[in-house]
Length: 374
Ligand code: B12
Ligand code: SF4
Ligand code: SF4
Image (cartoon, rainbow, N blue to C red):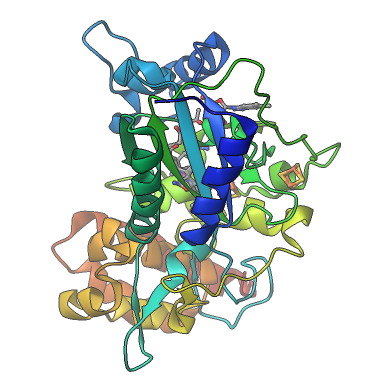
């Protein structure tokens, strides 16, 4: 079967670049307890919120994600591939037309159809297709055991990405590459190929220095310490993962984010010169950059499917997207949204009705106080 040598790491990196990735590396799977303990402490502290999949355990009660070998005893290394998804558009922290919301950058992606129109695309599919090409080369070269994952495997992708030299883990918890910035999505191939003794694989130096911009900018104080997030406070969690009502304490701080959040990456100096991705499947759908809240609000199920089927927004469905839109409308302070908020209050969806009631109350209160828009 063979083992990883520096030359073979170079070889697989070339395969990954050929398949359309922007960076790749190999991490040895070790039984280093530090990551496992960090992950277990994080879950035990309630940081995972209601993301039950992060809390899954094996028959002996060990958290599946606390080490690669917990679920895959045969694993010896992980090939980590990263792709740049930096769309051609503004940052969320820049001035935007009034009455617009924010959809996270990674969800702007589109795939050009034959007529040039951009159809929704999802990074899970886009990356998995490319990853399979790298896997084929690995199977041919090593005849080894492999598993491909984009996001969904029992593995903490950022921890292995750092070990594979893709970048360092920033204080905002994202993997940052000196050349590419942090607009990176990760895909991994767990393999049974061991790393040759003495074959040192480069690890990137931490270049955050004394900067704390991401921690200072986070509106919900989700970055509770450098490199540590309380995901249950993160706007990405609240807008995408959280089902039901969003706790009132976070609603004002959510601002105009309706799907995900990019603030702690938008303020990062390493993203200032990040290259723009123009790859097939990663093209920017203009309509998703600063989308009008009214446009999102008026979508019925058919329109939602048309715009978002096959895109990451499918995850929230129309139901949660509208809940988020209601909150963003409330935060805009704009009385033009009162009619739609009133209509939602009369509807069958109780969570939406309550969010809309909160939002309308916030707009009216602002009107009474004569406050200007946020
Ligand atoms: C759950 C999840 C979330 C949750 C929780 C995020 C979090 N920080 O944990 C929520 C919904 C909030 C979220 C948000 C986002 N996510 Co997310 N998410 C995941 C998922 C599925 C699991 C992450 C996880 O296990 N978290 C648990 C904690 C404990 O892990 P961790 O913070 O990564 O910490 C570990 C290591 O970093 C390491 N470690 C921690 N500190 C330090 C310090 C040092 C010095 C070292 C060496 C190691 C180290 O030990 C920890 C435990 O093992 C991964 C995919 C995957 N399978 O890994 C994607 C993933 C992390 N998400 C991703 C993305 C793109 C996002 C968003 C940008 C989307 C958006 N715009 O809304 C935001 C970013 C928010 C942010 N600042 O992190 C990418 C990140 C790519 C990157 N460049 O880092 C991933 C890898 C998905 C992918 N396949 O590309 N996400
Ligand atoms: S994604 Fe937004 S809410 Fe989450 S940690 Fe970053 S700035 Fe805070
Ligand atoms: S904003 Fe500063 S501290 Fe945060 S990840 Fe970027 S360089 Fe690191």
